[in-house]
Image (tube, rainbow, N blue to C red; front, side, top):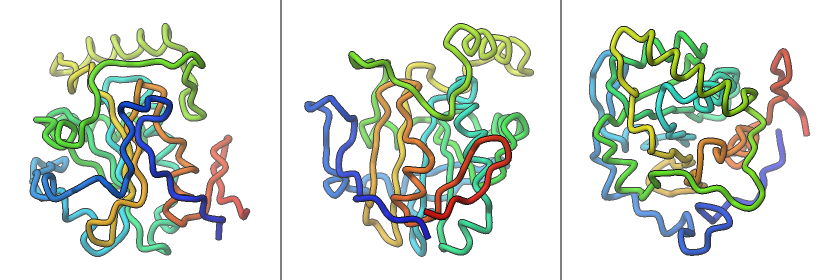
Length: 223
């Protein structure tokens, strides 16, 4: 098994006025918020972590190139790795549920995915709108495209989509939680910009799972 890093207690790194300890996060206000699957069937948010630990990633919007490439790597996490640890990997977007199928086909992501089309959970958790960059530019081990090429690809996908829309608020930022079993929050991070998402191996380590080598053919790393 991978060594488990100390649990991150801060949200919105390097921005003191936006920091909150993860143990101060109260999920009671969002437990009953409804999320929708790819068939438009709804379920309460709390159902994700009642009986098991859940790694929950909130993405910006399905047209965002950074989200696409991040979710592509999330899709490389082996299902057996999650099953062996009784953990769930969940992506939540903020578009209509009708865009889920195409997004999964595009990214190869086959784990759980839902949407919060009214952004109720995003808003109640206090996830930011707009992007903030620190003095040191944000970077991500999971995003390979540069801003110009990535933005052009996002625009092309929007233009060629059967339903032309942004598939979510383009200003909305995402984040990540590790929760459960039950309402305990083990890890929380709210993104400051499109490249500020938590590296996947950090999420896996914080959840007590083995890490992965994402280069070429992904494989489990014994550390």
